[in-house]
Length: 107
Length: 390
Image 1 (cartoon, chains in turn brown, red):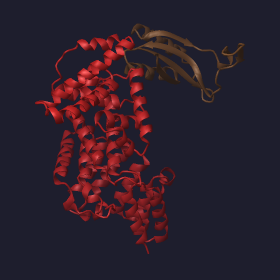
Image 2 (cartoon, each protein chain N blue to C red):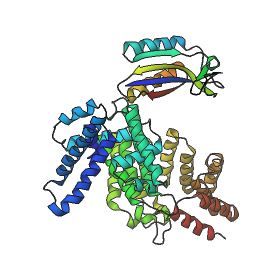
Image 3 (cartoon, helix red, strand yellow):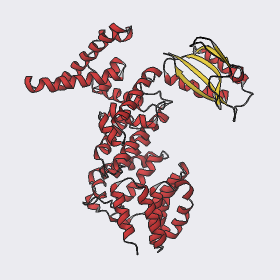
Image 4 (spheres, rainbow over the protein chains, first blue to last red):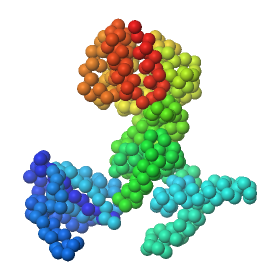
């Protein structure tokens, strides 16, 4: 199964900023063990643009689709046999990133 | 049966519906055709056919190769040992940490204990539709999120077992001290089911101390069930219970388990300590004969493991017997901030204030306890105690 693994940061109580070396090492391991599909850190939510072309005319709006204290700071896509494996990896990921992690299955 | 169907078809919904359909066919046919020579095997075979029919119907609509493949699995029904393993797999799936606690309890009662949705809804005082949705959502999550149907690996087992025990303890407690103005004060079907499931877990993990501890705790508590509520529906506290009415068989089994754990030489966990406390109580001929020094020592150990205010409160109740109500009251009063909404806190204070002769304060504490208590027998007891104050 594939899981979207979201790294959640908190504007009022951000995680530490020195995690990159640990995250890189963790990524190496994900690749070596065959779980890694994709990973990427995200720019600040201020850099987001929402596009809505459901009506007659396209509307662009500056900023994320929802303003919130907690926001998506980065994502992984993992290939794992089941949720137990994904949750175990996510437990490590949360410590490595010093942030909360959401694990959500793809359909 | 649901466990073995789930194992074979990998889907709780299909398993549950196939089992229900098989029972429906049995209800229709058996009265007319007579009961088959092996009713269990008949039901399993019928349920298997129903499940395959269902998968065939669905396979036509969607591409379900994996499920279609199972049509070719013609293994005979699993022997007893394997069925036990399958039930355990089902318990671990229903008690998965990725599910909310209330969901785990509901799902375990539905899938493992076989209670109906209306029964579970009644036990937890929610609407049937709400409970139905909760269970449906949980099954959908198990499927969509890939919650595995298996016993966790050796290294994960201790934490996962403690999650299962927490669910079983919750089921037991809801039966033992049922909440709600319209429910019986004790719901025997829930305590009995919790004990049955804990026995099952113990069969599979006979070496696990906390499993043995929880079973002992339940047995020693259940042994006092009939003595605990009077004929007119009032709670009877430990000091006033007719000890001759306790179930001697359950007490003996509980004591046996506690002794087994004591001789193991392994440091006891929370359930084992609580079981030991109950073993002390059930060993005493009357309340004066109780070894309170031992009870307080056990609570001291428990506080070191789990320094939560509720444990401290229970320790104080034992301290009152050993060092007097004044000493106990001093430590109870310190818990006000943490336990102001917990009715046993007010009931304990009311009792201690009564025993130190402070009737006015005691009455106020009883009022608060009555307001917060949800169990009818307990409300009746607290009300009588309050009204006896001078």
